Image (tube, rainbow, N blue to C red):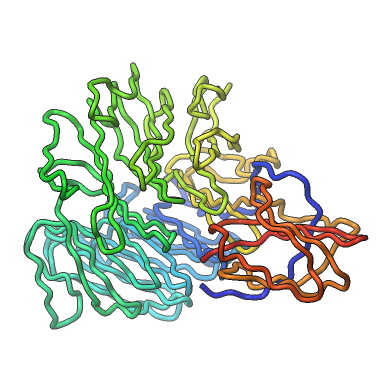
Length: 565
C-alpha cells in the first residue's frame, strides 16, 4: 500500500454515532425503453480513492450526463441478450476518469463479466467468458479480443490505470470445461478461481500448455503482467458460487461457498461426506493460505430461493441467503433452526477459529439476502446489509424495527455480536442493488448502486427526486459530513504515515501536550505526553480506525487515523 503524509485537522468531537451523509451520485441515463444494470463495483482503499463501476446495457446509454459526450449504443436488443458492457472509473468526488465499452462485433458474439476488481495501483481486472469477438472501445484505440472456442471460453482483461487495455488472455478451453467463479488479488498478483470439469489447458500464454485433468476447483495464479505463475486444485464439492479472501494477512483464509452436490472430503479427519438426498445442501469451506483445511459447515433447506453468499472480517464468516419453509444449520440435531410460513432471509456469523455460530438473524417475508448487498467493515467492527423492506417488515432481524412503509434500508450491526445499531433509509423503488464499503484516509465510505423503477430521491436530506426512471445510478455516502466546521481552538499537526503499519509521527505542535488513543467505541488503548516530535507505536493494535485525542493547556482536538499492518 502506498502511504502519504496527511495534514490532519484536529477536531473537537464528542460521540461517534451511525449516520451516513450523502456526498454525490452519478446517473447512467438510458433512452426510451432500453435498460441497464450495474453488476460490479470496487474501490481502491486508502490510496488513490478511485471507484470502479461495471455493468451491462442494451440500447443507448449516456454514461456521463454532465459532459454530454459519453453516449453509447449497444448492438443488443432491450433484452439482456448479446448486449454490451461498460467499464467506468471515477475519482473519489465522482468525476469520470474514463469510460470503456466492450462492444459485441456481431449478433452471435457474447460476453459475460463474472467479476471485476481494481488493484491498489488503479489497474482494472475483468474476469468472464467470451463467445465470438468483442471490441474494447474507448480512449484513442479500439482493440479486438476473439476466441476460437465454439462454446465460448474464459477470458481475463487488464486495463492499466489510464484505461489502456494492457493485456487480454483467452483460455483455450470451452467455458463448459473451465468455468470462472471469481477473482481474488493477493500482493497485487491475480488469482483466478474456476470450476474445472474436463481436461483443460489453464495456461493462457500462447504456445504454452498446462493441462489439468481432474474434476476440481482450480486456482490459477497470474503475475501482474498477466503471465502464468502457478496453479493449485482442491476437490470439487458441487456448484461453487463464490471464493473470498480474508484480508487480514496475519491469518489468511479463503472461504469457498456453494451447493454441496457431490461426495466430497471437506475435512481429511472426517473423510467422505455425502449430501442429504432430496434436500438443498449448502456449504462453506475455509482453507488457509496454502489451501490446507481449516473448517467447514453444511446447511440443509427444504426449498431454496437464493444462493448462499458470504463476507469475511476479523476472523468471522458472515453468511446470508433466502429460504422457504425451513433451514437447518446444525445437522447434529433433528430440529430445524429457522422456520417460516412463506419466504425469509437468513444471516448468521461463524467464528472461524472455533467453527461456532456466534449470532444469527431471520428476516420474515424477505426473499433474499446475497453478497451483492452485504459488506463488512473490519476497521469499524461493523456489518452492513442493504435490502428492500416492505410495510410491516423488520429491518433489524430482531423483531425490533418494523417499517411503516416500503423502504430501502441500509442496516448496521456490530460484527462481533450481531447487535442492531440502526439504519439509513432511502425511498423504495430501487432494484439490482449493490453495496460496497471502502475506506479512504479521511473516512469510511458507502457506495450504493442500483436501478430505479421510477424517479427516486437518492439524497435523503434533499426531498427531491434526483434520479431518472429506468436508469442505473451509483451514489456515495460517508460517515462524516461533506464539510466540517473547525472548532475555534483548532490544533494543527502533521500526523504521518496514515494509514500506519508499525508507528506514526506527530509533528508541528508548538507546546507540550497530552494524548489519548481511542477505539471507535471510545475505549482508551494508550495515553502519554508529547514533547516536540513524537513517535507512537501501533504494533500491538489491531487493524482498524482509531482516534488520537491531543490536549494542551489552551487547545484540544481529535484526528482520525487507520492502523493497517
